Amino acid sequence: MFVIYASVVSNWCLPEESHPYAVAAKARLAEEDAVTSAIFWFELRNVLLVAERRGRITEAQTTALLSSIGALPINEDHDQDERVLFSLARTYRLSIYDAAYLELAKREGFALASLDKALLVAAKAEKVSLVGEPEANIST
Image (tube, helix red, strand yellow):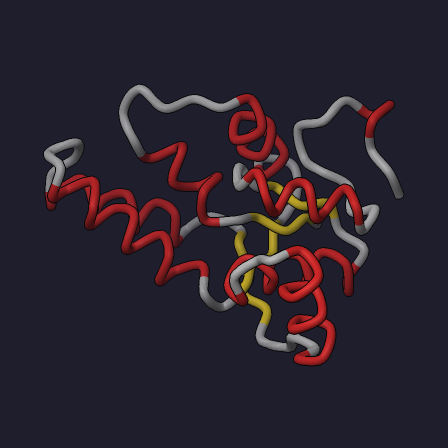
C-alpha cells in the first residue's frame, strides 16, 4: 500500500501531462492498493473543473474520468493525528491539506506519491519513501 496525492492522479487525467512519478504511481497501483487523504476527491474535482474552464477537457471527460478513478483501488483515510498534522504543516510551511498526505504516509509507514515539490522536500526530511524515486534514494 502507498499514499497517493491528488496531483499524481490529476497528471493522468490531463492531456499532454506525463511526470515520471505519476507514471510510476500508476504502474504501482496496478499491483497494489493506495490510500489517500479524505481531501483527495475535493482536490481532484477542483483540478478537473479548472481544466474544463481552461478548455483542456470537456464536462463529459470529467464525468468519465471521475468514474474510472472511482473504480481504482484507492481507499480514504479519515484518522489524521491532529497534533502531528499541525506540527508537519508548521515545520515545513505546508498547507494542512498537503500535510494530511504526509501525516498519513508517516503514520502508516507507506511511500508517498506526489508531484508537489514542497511536500516532496518535507517527505524526504521526514524519511518518508517516495514513489518513483530509485530504490537507492529511498529512505526508510
